Image (cartoon, rainbow, N blue to C red; front, side, top):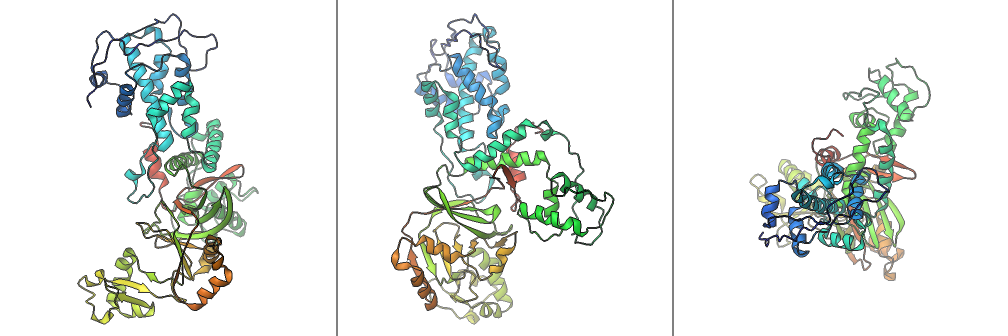
Length: 543
């Protein structure tokens, strides 16, 4: 990018003399030169290349100075200190000051009177780069989810960092301007509060007091296993087992069963009282692990939409839960089932368009490829027993016996199941057209909602009492009252009803959230957290 020559007067840095009320961390000294300048004008981009400055927002920085006629903006001490303080406190936003030139700023701001004209100009550039890169990370996330996941359906939040810098300088308030672009969401704010408490505790980053419980075979009640003493100790440490216990027993007795089931219930695990590897992994989570879990969930909220809308359906995939929010109030909550680990429910947002009563089920591509065609190739009873019909691209029915199931011909057909008791969509589906062919729907398998672990679908979201949710979405249309809906259901006829209210649907994923004055940590059903932490943490860090 071609940048015009940097003139001698471009980087006039007018550093005001220090006040007596020094703030911690910055010790700017008195008797600074009033004006410093570069002695040799040069092309800004070339100057940056030669300086070797570790810039994170080079393109935005070049654009900013071009728009600002190459005038310096950090010539007032209050602005410099305000930015410095924001970076120093970035840990309370779940970010790391190491990523924003913190040590370089600390070093240079404490010895301004010793810096050469070139070093002062470079400090000006570092301060600008710090603001621009921190604003981008705080507003839209340090990482780009499109680089992390094959399926991601939420546009990345756009942060006008250059305009924000102009606004911050004009208003003489760096911290407030930056705070405005952080997520303004109760979940994020609750995590932020818990993070502040964790950072107060020096033991957060210390070594674990108890050894890890090893994974292995399932342990059922009344069985003996050498890992049992550690399970007792861990549950007691976590507050689930306040009583004394026999520290050498290896028997999984009745005293352990209820505390373990309570722990499983609190962490979104199947509360069956069986000690499996998922339960052991949660028991092994240390305070440091929970710190990491808070950070990765704060990062997720920087990816999620800034504005969820006035009316929306919010689905936490990891918690198998759906809330309906209207004008800021949560009016309904429903249990859900989501995709399995092999067929994950994607993260995305869309708008509800219509409701279908007595739906047919058109088999989605993944199920068709991996289940239906292989099943029919073995025996056509697979189709008949499931009431599956085959159609060509023109919508005409095809006799399954005429299809060659071995040569790929079946891939070109559509498979559909008519309404009825065995239809896996149940009596209603709620549609928000999207590229993933995902929607909300009823299910005949209502008993599965009593399970704690409900990653059981092929990607779509099954909703407990889905009919009540559909009726709610249509309650502004008097012609579709409860009696009318029952009449439609009794007819058995597939009926599509448009939703006239503006309701968004957000499929999101988070594994830690505030409940009252504490934070609840739940099972990371899709195993996203650890990989995200490895990418999120500062370089060369042991945190």
